[in-house]
Amino acid sequence: MKLDGTDSAKARASHLVSRKVTLRVPRKDATKNGRISSLGTARINEQCLKTYLEWRDYNGLPRGEQDNKRQLITYLEERAEVLKQSSLNQSKNALQLMFGVRLPNVISEVETILSTRSYSPNEFAQTVQHQSERNALFACLAWCSGLRAHESATLRRMDELSASPNRRWSPHRFDGMIDYRLYVVKGKGGLQREVAVPLALADALELRRLDNAVKVVDRGVFYETHYDVGFGQAASQSFTDASVRALGLSRGAHGLRHSYVKNRTNCLTSRGYSFDEAQLIVSQEVGHFRPSITIAYYR
Image 1 (tube, rainbow, N blue to C red):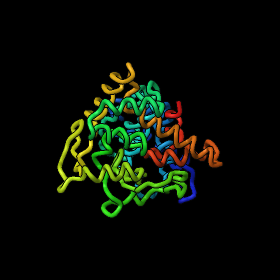
Image 2 (cartoon, rainbow, N blue to C red):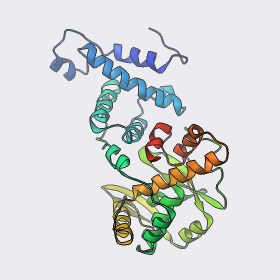
Image 3 (tube, rainbow, N blue to C red):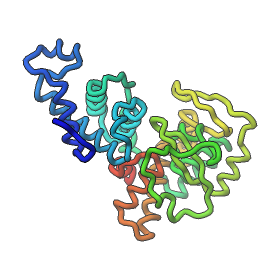
Image 4 (tube, rainbow, N blue to C red):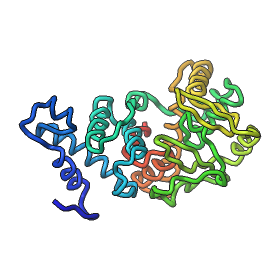
């Protein structure tokens, strides 16, 4: 079967999996040799691969790089926000088998995302009053610009870093926002994206710019940070503790991203975008690239 650039993800997945199938071979032997010995396993792998190839097509990634390890990891980290752990492991195993690469374990975030709710503006204002300046600045960046906890450690000016060039960025990102300055952060899988920081917040951020970048670590991952701003697990815990002191409860720092997604979606729909169009735009603003992921935040 010869494939060209017009074939569907399903056809390409079927072709790739068929090359790995060897029936009537003991499963243990097949696994050892990187083969598939049953039609049931072939179907599972084909579905996992089809979804991955659709994701690549959706994001305009070159077909000749489908075995790129960094892109495979980025895909799994995005899928971690919609798949339970067993399904996520299944996808990882399928990709490893198909492309002959060793991929790291990725932890599902479904339970965290689905259990989290957004904060109202009043709740947010009350909570940050119980934080230090550097951790309150992190919380404001998450609330106003949709940053993940570790991403505040990666903030760079636009003249220092650019958004990843191999993605189809929507020209409608940040529509409806006024008086902001663009920065770049590095998210999951190394994806670099622009984020809009309100001018007053950007001015406060620049007051905490370091003369020289310093290396910091969060959950075993090292970053080079240019700003003295809270980040990562410590900043998340700071917000959780402040929320309990202020409100008597906590929805976690992840609730700040929920708030950003909800606020931005409402802004865009009020400007005439359909809900689906707004979700597509916001999904790129928060570094997802699939509206199906962002919808989980709209609770």
